[in-house]
Image (cartoon, rainbow, N blue to C red):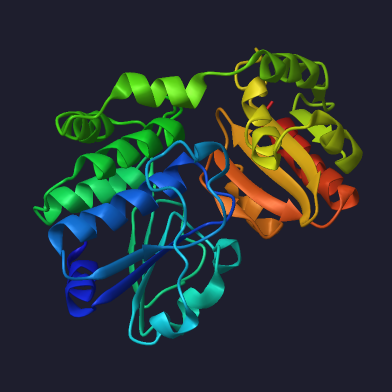
Length: 313
């Protein structure tokens, strides 16, 4: 599956690794993991990771992005990770690279790069990178194993989501065998301060149900400013508050931001991905996202979710 990308890595002296903007654990974990796998197994090559800041995942080793001049792309291989659509990529300079490649586990929307390895049966892009390391018989440095395990944990919901398979656990065991400190990873991922617990309580009180049982939270820019929290913690972090409400199979979190209304969609049973794609987003069957223009568009998307819930009652 990875033969063409491996050959492209071998054929280029400069490799620049991209991923989607506002990275989650899987995007950053796969980026850092692949960077250190290439550095370990091809020590003569220049390998860089680029994009916006790591946010709450700044605890991960080597999570500070590299400064790369435009000229570096001329003869480089640019690898895009964990991204279903080109509009989601952080740092569009990948388009200027000599060769482009993509590794992704989202449902296919469009071709982005010349070489692509896509498998939506994987729970995470980190899982794909771990499988690639095995297929290529690469040495696995500890920093890569730690990063990849972190991404597998976050994108599988601590191995709870139904994308988790026996293969997931085999790959997780392989990473643990490299010396991964699972206690430290979980401590960093899930330790919260009192203010965050209180904020979650406040957002729990904001949960609303549509006529046909879709749960949602809507946060205005004014409310967002009053939280003293970062955008990721509100947009991606608060959607999980609705995971386990009895009788709720579809839920959404809308957060107003400078770039528009960030929308996180989740479902326990139904394919909500086509609705995300309709509004310019994408992702997985049961976990997708989109960036919307305004509240009016957000309510239209919510109405589509409500119709989906009604059709399945």
